[in-house]
Structure formats: C-alpha cells, structure tokens
Length: 408
Image 1 (cartoon, one colour):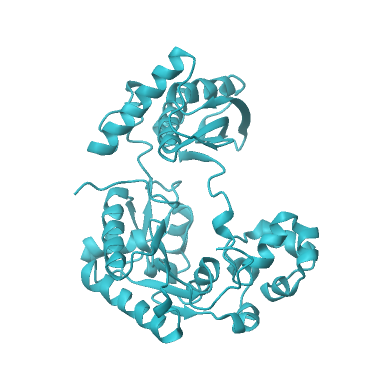
Image 2 (cartoon, helix red, strand yellow; image 1 turned 45 degrees about the vertical axis):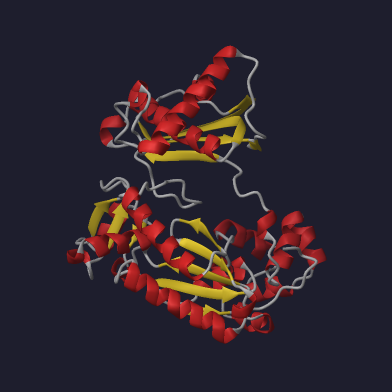
C-alpha cells in the first residue's frame, strides 16, 4: 500500500488470541481452568511471568515478577513455559484461518493480520467472518481458546480496536468515527506508544490520542522528525508500517538461575544466547555489523557495551566479537541477568563467501548445524561449550514472527 492511496474502511481484520500461552496450558490441563495461572521461563520468585491467565489478569496480575505476583495472590499457579506446545497450537490456528482466506500473516505466535477481500470489505461481511473465525477456533483447535478481533482500515487501527474489548471481544473502527474513537483512548492505548514516548508527547503538549490526531503534519515533523510524518498518516488509517524495518537488532536475554550466578555460569549462558541469536541472523538472511552485551549484577551495578565489527553471520565470529567486549567487564559482583544482541543488520543477497578461510569454514559449520536442528528439532545438535547451559536458556516463546517449525 502507499500513503498516496486513500485508506478505506474494513481493510484489515486483526485477530489476537487471549492469554494465549496460559490458555493453551488450561486447554491441555483441564484442572487448571478457572485457576489464576502464570507462565514463566523460570519459576523461581525472581523469574518473570510472560503470560497470565484471564483469571490472574482479573486479579491485577499481568507481566510481572513472580514474587510480586505472589504478593497479590499467594496461591497463583506458576508453570514453566513450553514453547513447542504453543507452536503446535499456533500452527493449528493458522490452518483454521487459512481455511477461510489465504490473505493473512502471522505477526507473532498469537497475533494474525488478515487482509479482507473486496467482498468482505463491508461491515456485515467482516463481522460475519470474525464470528465464524471465533467459532472455528473453538471447535477445531480448543474449546478454551478465545480471541479478540479488531476490524479497521489498517493493521495499526485494527490492532488498537481489538485491544478495546478483551477477552473475546469484537470491535470495528471506521474512518468517519476516528475522532470519537480516539477520544475514548489513552496515549498508551496506541500501539507503539510506551510510557517514555507518552512523556515525550506530553512535553510537546500532546496529552491524548485525540490531540495527537488533530496535530498538523508540520508540527508532528518538527516534534518527532520523520517519525512525526509516519504518525500523521498512521493515525489516519494509512498502512505505513509495511515500510518500517522491523528488525533493528536480533538478540536474547536471560535471568540466571542461582547456580549460574558466577562469571563462568554467565559466560556459559551467554554462549548459548549467542548461538540462538546467530541462528536467527542466518534464518532471517542478515549479516550483522555490531555486538552489544549487557550484564546486570546482584549489587544493582551493571555492564553495558556495544561495538561495531566487520560484517558477520557465523557463530565463531559472533563469539569472538562478544569476548572482545567482555574483556572490559569488571565482574565485581555476582551476575543475575545477561543479554546479547547483534545490530547494524544488513540483508544478504545470496550466499556471501568470505575471503578468509576460517570465517568461511565457520559459516558453513553454522549453517550445517542450523539445517540439522531445522530438520530434527531445536537442540538436536549443539556445540559442546553450551552443554551445561542448554537447560538454562531454552527456546522462548517468540513474540516476534514465529521461527519454530513443527514437523508433521
């Protein structure tokens, strides 16, 4: 789409599964239905709930530390995340949607954008499709799996509309109703506006979505540079987000279990995170030109450093670059969280053969490991250096585009 084209009503249906990870657990374990439940990668009190059930959300528990959730409701049930299980259900939901239309995209493991065909681009047909999708998911995937749906001129507006009524809601927004729609929202109800952006906008005198919507393009550009131009069109239903590069960095972070809160333990987990990030770099056909490392310590001190390097996509180069950065880390206290990311991402055109034999060998080995794990499942084969840490940083639920494949 283009900003030169006028937006139209009923272009996009946005489907968001409600409390997806927790609902899947309740689907496969009926005894958990109706129970306040949190799903976490690490179930100790310092772990973080990444998905809360509808019952937990009703108590005011969402994404938070497990210890904090227990202060709200001591009896909350905490279970360890099972990404492969959630991906099975994701695939089944994709099959249901595909049985209605081929014009959809999975934006994450629990979010789907459907481009409506001309015959469905009206109020009654789009509502009918939404109702049929809801019923089909309940009947063919799981009777405990509900979804909220928003229908609008663009993915952005459809998603914001879908957030208005949860769980199991259905909301439409039309271009003629945008002023009324925005008048009922807070700034942070807009996708892409976090509390930092909210403060920035309020410093410019924009204290509500309606004020944001009514601000001229010239003023928004003066305030937010190019981002102001995008927001001007985004708020008016233009599909501008197709033109934004989604992946500025690729990386992973992990809260260390107590037994890994040593320098060597942290390095073991970092190595594993680097191999996971390297896999994503290659699968998404990037090469990287920089590495960033962050380590938090129990004394609340931290180490953060980023550095540019020669272009790389192989595991060995990624590791060597990370260790160059880590030479500056003081390690004065016990580490509690480690994070690594690659930045300066550039799309690769075909296979780029390095003139350096050791780098080319590492690239081929890295891609061979990727292929084995793609064919036979994650962690079928892994470097010996990550053996001890392989259980500490398991594959997480992908909040971006899913990368797992369930072999049938």
